[in-house]
Amino acid sequence: MKPNGLKNKTRENHKIDGLSPDANKLRGHSKIINVETLTKNIDLAWETTRTPAEFRSKLLVLFRTTLSEGSNFIQDRFLSNNDGAEAVLAQAYLMDSLIKAALETVDTKLYRAPNPTRGEQLCIIAVGGYGRGELAPFLI
Image (cartoon, rainbow, N blue to C red):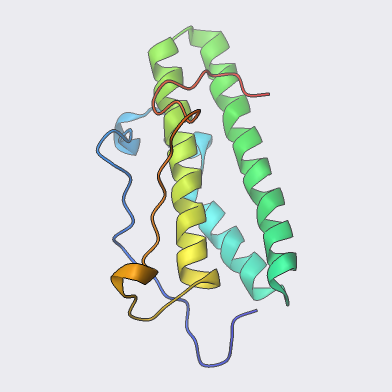
């Protein structure tokens, strides 16, 4: 789906606020979500689709699967070690990683601007229901 002449744009400035758990301090973070694999799968979906609707469908499946697998890992670990604080951090890390991947996908593939003005820059603000850092280890 990549338009001719346009390379994948990457930006290193996508950051989640300082409340985000540090992956290096979170035991088994790559088992919660493997960001590198997720990024590769997003790129593969982008390269192998012809329409935005088809791309969105593939992304939805990919993100749901990633969320489910990460949540199951967190739940299993919580049931084995009863460490609620770790489960909360792990769940926040999973959600932050998915949200960041979604923002980067939209920004670099769907609504890309080579040199965005202030009005073209994207931002995600989570309010009401996100639970920032207090998500339960069980998602239904």
